[in-house]
Every structure is written in C-alpha cells, then in structure tokens.
Length: 401
Image (cartoon, rainbow, N blue to C red):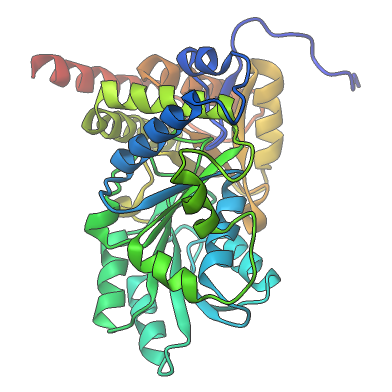
C-alpha cells in the first residue's frame, strides 16, 4: 500500500469545514503588505474603521469593541477574566461540544459552572435556562454564556427566547453570546436582543485567517467587570479602553489582519447584510436537500433550528466519517469538517459560509456525492441534482423580482 501523500491536484483546494473558511482574493490582497508600526498615526484610522464596522455588523450603537490577537478561545477567556471573580458561578446552557468546551475553560480558571442538559442535535432549551435561574435563590450566577450556533451539532439556538427566559426568571445575570459561527452569516442584533457581551472571531463569516477575535461589551457588562477582583492584564477591558482613547492598542496589534478585516467588512457592506443572510440561507437549504436526496440524516433534529453556516451529516451504521473525509480529501482535494467529541467518526460537516456562491456549493456537493460513491457509503444518487434544481429555481425567482 502506498503511504506517500498524493501529488499536487491542480486547481484550488475546496475548504468546506465550518471554519476556517475560504479567504477571498480581495482580503488576501488587502493583507499582502508590509506590517505597519504600532505607533504609526495611520493605525488609529484603521482601528476605528474596523471597530465601527464590527458595531454595524453586530447591530449595536452602544458596545465597546475590544480586539485581541487570539482565536475564539482567547475571546472566551477574555470574557471569563473580566466578568468573573474566583469562585463565582456562570450558567452555561448545553448546546453541544462548544458549550461544554467553554464550561471546561471556565472551570480551569477557578470559577464554577452551572450546566443545563442537552441532547445531540438540539440547541439550548430556554426552559432549562429559566428553571436554572429560578433555582438560583442566592443570585450566585453572574452571567449566562450561550453559544449561538454550535458548529459541532449544526444547531442554532433562539437568542430571543433565551433573553426572554432570563427576564422571566427575574434574574440579574448578564447575557453573553458566542457568535463566532454566526456573525456575518446569520442575523444578530446585539442591542435588540439585550446581549451584554458578544464574542466573535475572524475565521468564519468574517472570511479571515484565524488569529483575530473580539469582545463587544455593553456598559452594564463594563460596570460588572470593574467589580471583579481577579487581577488581569492582557485580557483587561479597561486597559484596552485607556489605550483606545489614544487610538491605539496596549500591545502590538495584528495590523495585517486588521487590513483584512477592513476589507471583509467592506465586502459584506457592499453586498448588503440582507443579501448576505439570504445567500447563506439559500445555500444551507440546498445542502439539506442534497443530504435528504442521498437518503442520509441531518444531525440537527428540528428544521426551525437548522444552521445557515453548516450542515452536520450522520453516517450510516458501520461506516466511518473520517474515512470518508480522507477519501474525499485525497481524491478531490476538498476538506470537510470532522465530528467532534462524542460525534467523532459518526458525522461529517459541510461548511457553507463566508465567500461562497452557487457554483462553489455545487462543486462542494459534487465532491461529497462522488466521495460517497468512491468510499462505498450506502446512499442514493441525486443529491447534486436536487440542490441544483433548488438553486436554479431560486435564481429564477430573484431574477424575476
């Protein structure tokens, strides 16, 4: 058996994990320059444009935006370090792999976690949130940490319903939302939802490489952070605010990623957010039609909770998802997302977010359908045709409009 890696496959690699995502040429070109000195006066304008653009994308007029050189886990930790003193409690409703990873991170830093149960393929249960908060008679819970779209399960939770659950319980807990996998791909209105802290990162809907993350922080959350007693340095919001008043960072910023962020925000604005969201919804529906035509099962159980950024597909019994992914990667140079945690080997995930159009999706689904046949995974043919029919009809409707 030949164990050597395959030779080069001509053409572009298809990157269809739910993050990192394909980086458009415009963003690559924007980043392709010498870095700026962090004392350069032009940096002030670059930072201001990025922060203003993120506020518009988050739909907030009030929040301060703090940018970090880190992935999403770093932005998680920034939230933990600023809001929670040692030993304090946070409610993390179960949504899947990433809600549990956030909970583990909270506990590793010396805080306490109250969890609500979850089932694979289901989002956060707002009723469980309300029940847990009502049970907190001493008001020990400082905040509710929620994952908007858990990319392990491809389920999107109802943030409006969770906000209502917090209010119904009459609890003063802060509302924190991880929008890493949804921002720039699905509607999110921070102020209207009453979200106190939004947590985001660069490598998904923002169409950038990993390495840049942020906290968007309301005035209520800032005031709460001022009463937290744990010493902090790199993640400290107040240090960021002091430096930002002069137009700069308290440390060397990722200037090239900021150039890329400025360009990606410009691209989203030029397309128009309603059109961006409609495009992601269209591609998600086309993907699900393909999966059903293949006679495979979508992990997310309820149609109302489907994610517009990815689709998690369950493998037939006795077949390994990672073996399928390996076959597709080696034969067609296309990378799909793996199953995480308890779902390892049981599912594969098709990312359909970011710089993505109808023809890109058709190539993606063709690669999956050919891979299913090549790996001898039981399925029916016709997934690509089902998606193509749907996209053609959708294009006709848009053109007629």
